[in-house]
Image (cartoon, rainbow, N blue to C red; front, side, top):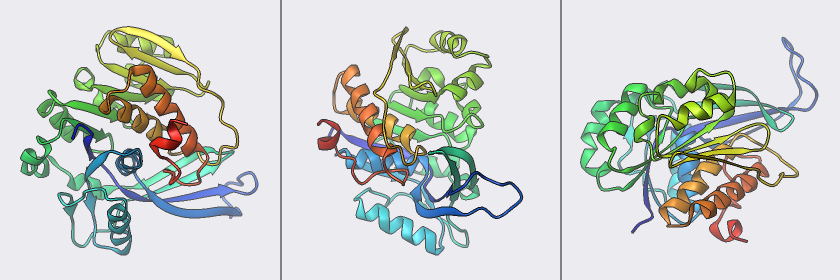
Length: 296
């Protein structure tokens, strides 16, 4: 099947806190707190599955209660995890998002277990990985692993989300071999060491003929594709509940379009609608996401 996709990356437990009143530092703050399953790799895998793709996920699990719950949830989504790594005497990865005014105020993570996804593990999975033409790589992996995967499978279609400005440096030497790269405004300027997004776009354009999608806080999407630059403005989304998973949904929608032979413009529309649906959900992924809903 052409829509067989392998996602490689992190899964974790997401704990979100949304203050009822403005934050008062160094004090207890009344908040609405909830827990969900997350992680960039896991979010993208879940989104792609809900859009109708056949998804496999290479990740790592501990042996605690959270890990057991994470596996059950992925099984229920019918995402294939049989080749994933299982580590004894280690807890699952955890992410905490402190929200304010429907956007991320502060993110905290305990993701040491992800370091167990090392080169030796991926060498042992080489035959399995080679069976896929479409590979999504989560930038939560180590730089060494990312460079190994991108170089080893550069003849495949490789898709990446930069994850954060703090981690974007890890892909600096791999840009030319990434088929589709998704960045936000801050990640783009950090990656290129430029002050403005205009300078960042010019720098990135010189580095690759592939596709780079850049979202920013001005509700615009800058696109570099085949050495041309364009900008689109999505429709404004009303009643935003949680913005934390919107970027993952956006890249998921675009990947779905590419893998299933939609045009570039159609893929962008799927990406924007996927993000819009996710913005209206309290979790990082939305059970309301489906290709039927996206194509309405």
